[in-house]
Length: 100
View 1 (cartoon, rainbow, N blue to C red):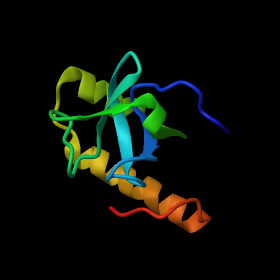
View 2 (cartoon, rainbow, N blue to C red):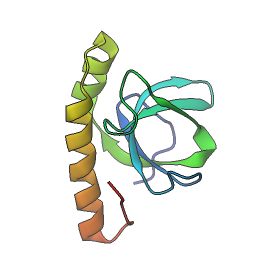
View 3 (cartoon, one colour):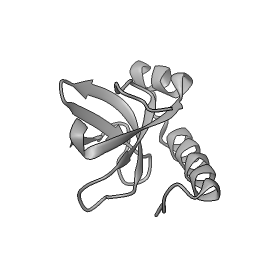
């Protein structure tokens, strides 16, 4: 399944830059710019700004975490655990190498 539009709470993988291959959760979007968090290097309060063309959208969506982020709660530990599980699933299926 190929995801075409970025949604808040969706997962994505960086395909360019020094963070290439790292998984992120979309915390907000501003036109063609996405605000990404991973709970470890980039918290929900200090998201990374990344151009939409520089990420690969994944068919994983976490509405419960996106709702908590929208409320302003600090959910870095949940974001980190969700992305770790997603990375392990992708590693088992041989999709990509994750450095988390």
